[in-house]
Image (cartoon, rainbow, N blue to C red; front, side, top):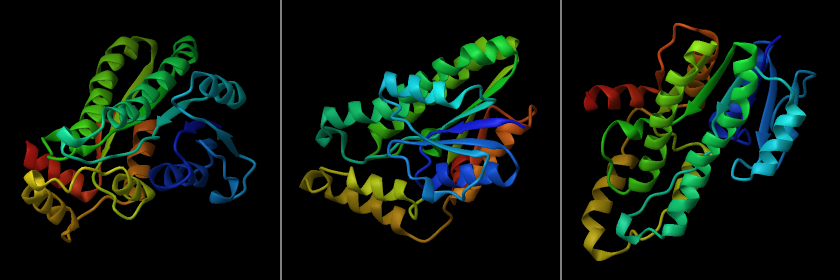
Length: 248
């Protein structure tokens, strides 16, 4: 029986991915900053651990408690929007600490066991927003684009050891807590110089159309974890597919 460790499991993509793997008889180590076992069905194959991906000691404790794993899913992250001129640099650093450096730190921590075993998979949840420029999302897009570049380079480093790296690129998911987090970290939109752009961008976001559902991401992560022939990049969600076609 294989074991997957998933970050950011308190809601949204991470929670649905944990359920997806549990339903398919995997052992699941579901991590979140504040453990809430009640969000997942009780199971002998489930462990819920505290993990803050921005804290080295928290990473060390979580991996020690988890024991050997077969797949790491770096899902923890949050979004933010603002005209870059108006975005505090502290917020930019916070984005990179979680979305980028947290992903890098977890990956670096598990690679030795994967390399020594000659097997292992790292799946990094990025974003389809990286496929083409998006106004008001410069810092968030940059944090995820860095994850893409990092994943592609490390994939070339570890392939000969039997270790696989994959990216899952979801579209927008307004009905998840991630969508709520984006709104809570959005600032600086009231500057009159950007009023027209804000109306244009957020009007398009609020318009009806395809979106990404948590199940779309869970299925893409499952494919990456289980299919050695799966591509390095996997799109997740009807809007991500449409976005990729438009960006091509």
